[in-house]
Each structure stands twice: as structure tokens, then as C-alpha cells.
Length: 78
Image (cartoon, rainbow, N blue to C red; front, side, top):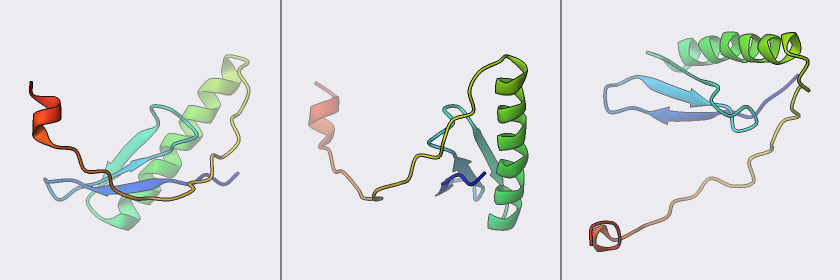
């Protein structure tokens, strides 16, 4: 199976990887290659857990677009 993943640069230099189709399936690594290897392992464990509990295996959720949204601090801190 193929899943889209999001790679996010952390402030600590690590790369975090999330799988939108699998809520809570997150991993990280010091390099892109390590992060992708670790998320493969996390995806397998996630899917094995679903299978063991008789839950359906989710299909991929294609990422339509990656963009930014700006909010003003005043909107958050009132």
C-alpha cells in the first residue's frame, strides 16, 4: 500500500513525519531517510494493530495542497 506523508522540520533539527490517512501515526528521524524508514515501520505497526482488532485498513488520503494560513496573535490571545 502507498500512503502520502507530511515531513515537518522540527526546531530541534529532527524531521517529524505524519500520515494523514492514519490518525496518530507519527514518527521522526534525524535525516529525511531515517524519518521515512521510521514512518514505514510505524505504518506497518499501525496496520497490524488495526488488523489484529478486526478494523478495516484505511485507504490513502491524497494531499490536495500544502499551503499556509496566517492568523493574528490577537485572534488567539483575547
